[in-house]
Length: 412
Image (cartoon, rainbow, N blue to C red; front, side, top):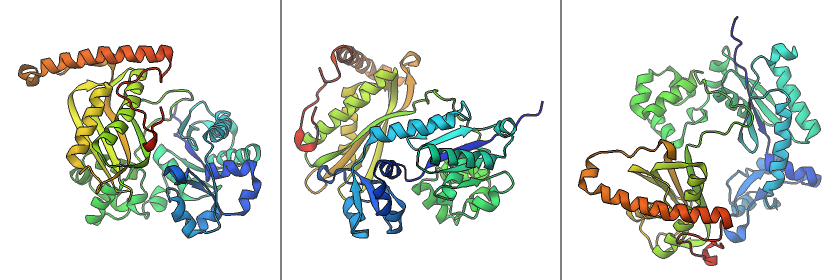
């Protein structure tokens, strides 16, 4: 029997947080408005805006003062994430009426595998997409844009192609005409550093990239270049997960924007202690360990640096994650009044399950690594005991080196 052609939808709620707020306060539809954090605690960043604010040039991630400078009459609304989650669940329930393969990509985006649906419903892909859009508008009161394609990458690019409240079909016949003339920066997963490298080599559009020999992309960007080449040529074959399937965890990270800038080593260590504590807790919750520790630092001017360190073993130890993150900061940042830190993110990647862990046996074992291994084992027993107590008595009952500091925003 002939295999059915893949049909993937990407459904994206338009201006989602702002649209949710307008459900309960319809008057907000008539004024430029944005959902933003708390300026007093230094997290006053626009996370969503309506179409009227967008016309003034207000962008997501603008600070409150930047948005107000562009649009003096803008109305700010504080975020209500529980409410947005409730609306998201209702929207996904509509998607689930059409297919069991619904994979939320974020609170306002979902992939749907609609393979076979046109035959089942006796409707074209566009008619199905338009029907879903109409149901969401009628039953929920918000609008969505839908990308219709034969793979996930192009479906996502389709939902971005025309907004708001639109359906865009990207097919095997038209993707070269629609997507190849676009800037290479519009290709999904093409990051700024990769785009800069490609532009320097006169690879300016998605079509320019697609026409390159795959080997050249590998020489320029490594495996990531090959991946971008396959995406540009419509070769993405990643499956849509079934509703309820948990995604594979590839990294665990926690970040924080502090109430005020950190300028001393002691303050940074306090912040790292809290973040490493949350990362280590999450790793144990999921039965995972990782062999790469990463840290990202952001200055008040939003200058960001990211650094990572590869280990010759796997870890989920709060103490080790904290110490390694601090070492990365000390090596790559001049700590002091002249280099304040606004935000820090700590993460662990290259994960395996605890059950799969196999210590690497190499020359390090013959050069004193054995002693380090025993030290880690002792620390692991200590932290495992603390973890068990916290599971039983509550997460805040006992911590590892965690210091309360209201001044920088650590309240626990």
